[in-house]
Length: 489
Image 1: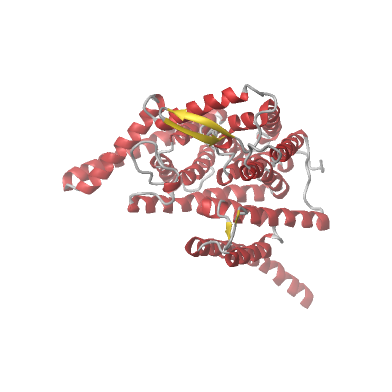
Image 2: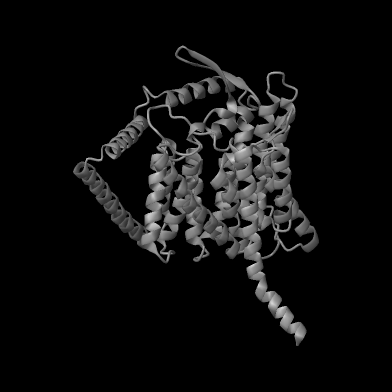
């Protein structure tokens, strides 16, 4: 009887312990990142971060995946791009890399000892593995090329071979519908927290960390482009769920989505505006007619609310002669309208002209060896008027084109076949599970938007954005385990 009582107490305490354990993981790792931001990422802070990561992530690779998502969305480059700095050297291993390594090791240990995770390795995974192996071959060949920068080659290898391991970590960690929902709800929750960055940007007159993405035209970003990128993902997932009436408080949810969309607009990232539009069209096309009508009705109501708020704001400005606010309002309206117009007229836009000239220069060089490409670590001459420079191919601001130029038709074909296999295999299961269908459609819309945005930015060549491409692909593939055959494959 005593043993039964003790066992019951232990069972009852597990959920509380798990929540406390997870909370401590978030607090400790966030604390060390903040220390690094304040005093620099010294070997001591890195050692403490490494120890905390080992303690929390090694026993739970699923928690590691959650920490990767949360920390990247909140701290972005301070988590994903901050190197270890010693007295004599800089080592480009980032906090993100440490969490990934511990999560992979934790999964491997768990699988060896308990064998409870379902392993799938179909054509989709084989194609991705072949792409990663090909990336390794290109890394090795670049080491024998005197014109290739070894550091750039190594970084390219990480983005094309190391970070795709998150795809495997995701499908081998997210294997129940509860885990699947948990990850997507975490993305939505963290998106709500990012609203704080928008508020800070409005009060400061400029968004935090926006100096890393300067504008090619006049204007001020009130939200960093990376945070706007994360909000785009969250907004598309939330809109899909909203279309299927999956939120208890629809009014509050609609308000949050409006704020997210406002943040994306105030980031002045034109390619995100276009990518978001592509994602929205995708949702409207795929959702059933009834759900589509509900979403359109909510959009009309939300649009009416936004217009009303703008009119009230303008009236208050004119009524109380709020000159400062009026100046900010007029400036923001002017900048956003100019950025929208610049999408259709590129004659005087240095950013668009830079891309067009670089793409043309890359195409001319690629034609010399279209099958194998130019390899990793290469730079190309670029002329824009009187301005001349050499630019890294990986910084071409078009991820599919960057793969094609560097790895030739072989590389881009493998990459394209992997995506086709992923989408075609996923479609077999996402419509079979009515409970998870809204989540999968939101995921697919977000992936479509990310791919669209990658046509104008080096998103797969930048880890703090590229990792979400691999994680979302893994979540989409998890439908085979959650809704498909239950046997091990």
